[in-house]
Length: 346
Image (cartoon, rainbow, N blue to C red; front, side, top):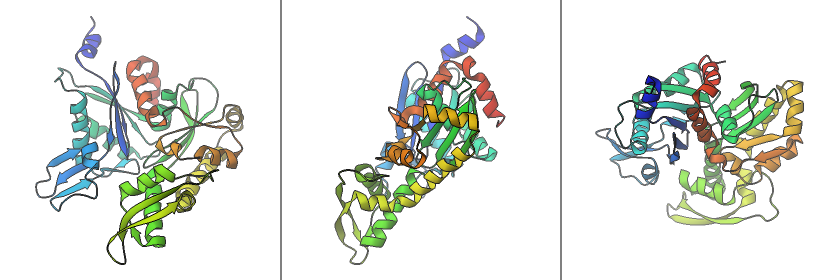
């Protein structure tokens, strides 16, 4: 057995989709072994980590004074380096319960629009969390690999990946990103728009989790044949008492219109920057949508209506990126040239 094969035997490589809203981890030879919110609960006096992931998210908006909940990533990038490192370390410990003789090799996805400093922060966090080596991959490329798009062909493929913190629109050909548009407007901004709308129209204060629930239950990007209704619970800002208000899907669509319009503008910008030959390919192949935001009702229909292009939402859009990292760690030689190009920022 060669030394490299011996190293692979002793360790377990990981693929990580480090998202603003959720972190997913792929374990080589196993598959997705972790899917938890990117949230950390901290004791305020000692700065000790109380909980991470799903347990910490359940505390959002419900903590006593001595505990605060933190989302260490915003708009797809790290805003708190130390807490992100602790969160990653905690997730890795959950995944790899046995102490390996060799630290894992990690492939981690990042938004395509982040700076070199921000990429370095992601890499350092993964190294501090216990990686022996870290490889960075742009989210649209990872998503395309995860879906199974033939990225190596001389054909244009457009991928729209809408997550919690960023929306990525990329055109991929010959194993590279020809052009990409990355904006820091996505699911979180939709939630914030719902919170602002409820406050302005109904004097109702709701939390982040409630806004996300409303978006999932009745949110849409384009009119539906049968509009929906939902009772929303919160606190009356005038009387200070608990209150229930019935809202419609039409209202929530109106509330989210600004961030959705921003994403639509980014799609138009990306199409305008696409070389004509690749644009012709997109007419034939259509646009592929991934990420949690693509699950918003009729978002594909709205893009289809405004661009005149075929639009497809992939099966299980939440896991495309981490599946892509999993394919990379399963066959490093095949994707080595892509990782090297991404390392150089090409």
